Length: 395
Image 1 (cartoon, rainbow, N blue to C red):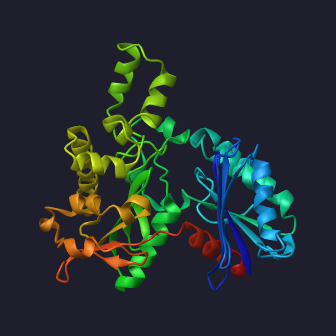
Image 2 (image 1 turned 30 degrees about the vertical axis):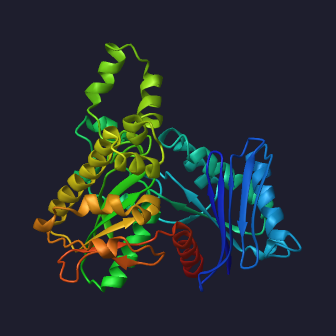
C-alpha cells in the first residue's frame, strides 16, 4: 500500500511516500517559502537528490509541484496519481473531538476548522492541505492523524486549569502537542528496553519544545497546554511565565495585547535572551564567553531538569529519559547539561557515548545506570503511515 504523508505548514509542505507495511521510504521532499519568488524545493529518491529555487505563488501550486515531481518521467516514482492509495495528513489540533486516527469526511473537516482558534498557525494550513489533496488525488483515501490525540489520556487532575468549570466546558484545558513524535519514540523505547510496565519521559527539543510523562505507553502529563506556548524555553517562545507579567506589560508598560502575544511567541525564548535564533550560534557564542548565551543555555536546561523531576514524582519512578527531534538528537551539550547532577534519580551519564553522532537509537547512559538515557530519532511520517495503515487494515 502506497501512503503519501503530508505535513502542511503555513508556508511549507513536507512529504514522504512510504510503502506499507514494509515501511520502505520511496521518496521524500520539502517545499519551503511558499508564496515567495525564491521558494525552495527539495526532493529525494534512491536515484535523485535535487534542490531548486523557483517562484511558488500559492499552497495549491506547491502541492501541484509535488505531484509533478512524483509523476516526472525521469525523476518520479509513480505513473499516475491512482497509485497513491492513502494520504495521511498531520493535523496539529483536534481539540476534544478526536482521540484516534480517522478517515476524513466533511464532518471531520468541519471539526478541524472549529479548532482554528486553538492552532491558528497550523490548522488552517492542515485543512487546506486536505482540501487540495482531495482534488489532486481523487481516488485516495484521506486520513487525519492528530498531534493532540496521544494526549487524550491525560487525566483531569493534570489537564484542567484551576479556573471556573465554565471555562473547561468552553474547551480551555491542556491539549498537548508533538503527540505523534512523543508516541513514536516512547513506543520505540518500550520495545528496545522490553518493558511490560514503563515510566518514561520523552524530551522533544526543536524550535518548538515539549516533554511528556508516558506511563505504560500512555501520556499522563505534558509541558505544553491550551496552546503550544508554555512549558519549556523554546526558539522564540517564552514557555512558562507568570500571567501577571502579561497584565503588567499591557496595563503599566503600554503594550497592546497583540504586541504581547507577538512578543511571547515570536521574539522571546532563546532569541529574546540572546539575539540568536539558531542554537548552534548560541553554543558557539557561549563557548566564546558570551554571558547572555551562557545564561540562556543554563536557563533552558534547568527548565528541562525541573520537568524531569516533577514527572518522575508524578509517575512514582523513572525507567528512561528520551531525547528526540532536531536539538534533542544533535545537541550533545544540551543533553549533557540536562543530565548532569541527576545521580539522585539513578541517572548515570556517559560523556563519551553522548558525543557519538548517529542516526540510530542509542544509549548515552552508563552501563550501570538505573535510568536509561536514550537518543531516539523521531519519525513522525512513519508513525502517521503506521496509524493510517492500521486504521484501514482494521476497517
